[in-house]
Image (cartoon, rainbow, N blue to C red; front, side, top):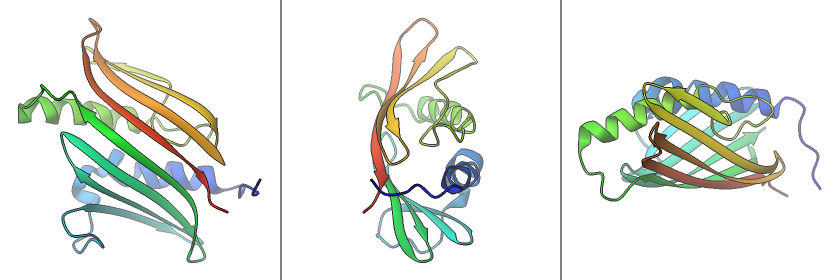
Length: 160
C-alpha cells in the first residue's frame, strides 16, 4: 500500500472549498484540456488539484491531485438530479444546496461533503467506505419528506 502524504487531506479540503464548493463554475478555467468540459483548478505547492467534468443534470468527472507534477491521487464520480427533473430553477436549487453541503468537507473524509447536512427543507447524506488510499461512496439529496432529488457515486484513491 502506498504511503499517504501527511498533508494530502488538508490540501484536498482547501482545494475543494476553493473550487466548485466555494466558487461554483466561477473557478472554471478559460481553456479546459477537454473540449466541452468544465475544468476547475487549485494550486498550493507542492500540490495541484484539477477537477474536470461534463454535463449538468447528469454529469461525470474526475478529480486529480499532482505532487511535484506527478499525479498521486484521483477520484472519479458520476451522478446528478433525477432524470424526471428538467426544470432549470430546480437544478439550480439542488446544486446550490449541494455546494453548501460540499463546503462541509473535512480532513477525516476529504472526498465529498459531510456524512449529513440539512438545510432549507433538503437533506444531504454521504455514505463512504475506505480511506484516502482507496475508497468509494454515494451521496444523495432528498427533500425532508424523503422525496429523492439527486444521487452521485464516487470512488478513488492513491495511484501506484
